[in-house]
Image 1 (tube, rainbow, N blue to C red):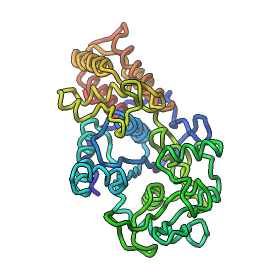
Image 2: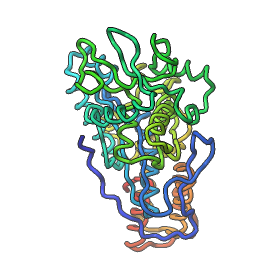
Image 3: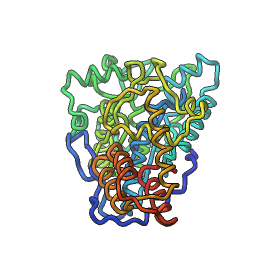
Image 4: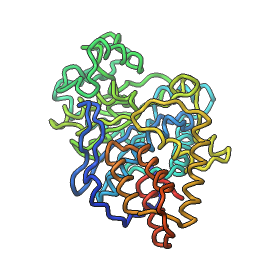
Length: 415
């Protein structure tokens, strides 16, 4: 699947030896800040993608902008980065929406995937190196399941009509270490998130569907497992292992994915390779509207595309998101975009006017903030304080260019 167009990202020339030399982020599995990425060489990360049955809302954008900061911060440190992401272009919600609207499910998936890419381009989110659809990944999914079958962890339920394939999560090594939930909460959460703990024939309520055998009226594909389609958790596991290899640096996504999704990906990947699936599991917070988490199912959404259609500058949308720490839960209001537009105008005017402070000082503060748990609000505040500080002097064209490149390189804000 074609990824969206990559913006040109300048490499900042400002050297800041006082800034931290590594990125530290909060690892859910250890409940603490940890260093992620190598000291030199290539960082590898995976962020779970969308199910394309509706437009990109600000909860989505909050997640992908957050992990764009990680991507940019690694690159600013001089690392190469390999980034993989899926798009679940066949799944129950997509098929249900297509049936409701009378659309062909493949056309709906393509339309909404393209809208998502367009929104991400506008927000200057760096594209994944590997952007892979669930349908496209079927050969890798089947190969992974065949690799797992000798372990005895992959099995079919005894159902003469629909003998689906499951993965025995609870029997896998290190199951329960990502989200750290007690067993009773796991079952409840699994049910809430679309799992089937009460399915007859399963060895354990927490075992997850990895290959859904064909149903009448649903899309399906031939395989050595029988005609069917992949389950969600195994899709991400297969794509990550195929394009990043075992024990990559970060698996990321919204905090609602810690369990069951990332928990189950981790145990599948570890069972297949004998190595940890990811070194760290990093999660962004939830964005609310009208008192509840933004949700396609509830319809309480503010859409990136709608804000753009209203004439809102995409850089202001991005700046509004950056004003909240990536791990925090918060509620979107009209004041967010208004404050961001005012801030963006101040930044542009100040840099254009040419009275600037010490660029090295600014770069040090911005980089220190971002390398310390991607603290974008602290980085944004540092820019505000620096532009308003006393002692600013007339800047050269090189100084103005250096500031623009710094903010583009690190925060993704194009002045």
